[in-house]
Image 1 (spheres, rainbow, N blue to C red):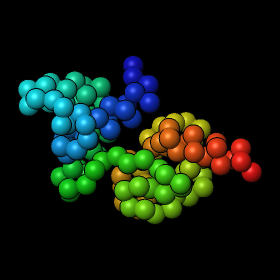
Image 2: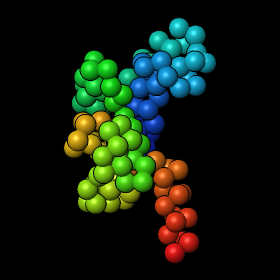
Image 3: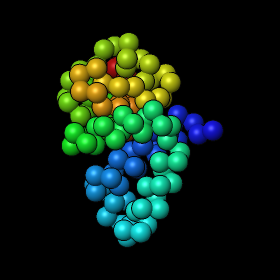
Image 4: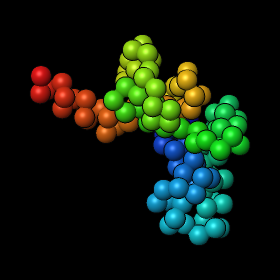
Length: 119
């Protein structure tokens, strides 16, 4: 069974492929994109795929990192409790403001540790 981190990474890759953004979408041929899309869709649970597909139909990305306490899809601050869940579980949550899947970016975690250490 895939781990939450693996599912998050797979959803990020799938979103990049299906929106045509990111280095992966640019590097693969059309047949490679179809194969990789099918492979990623087999990893991601159906409930998450349904939400992902609905977001794409609206012309929105389905997943975005949380940076400095803000959802990077809508730039709105997240509640403290939601930030704490994201940090502790390293799992997906849904932004209450825009409905995008959000995750705590690894780079954000490193930046936060540096800020805390500097205090």
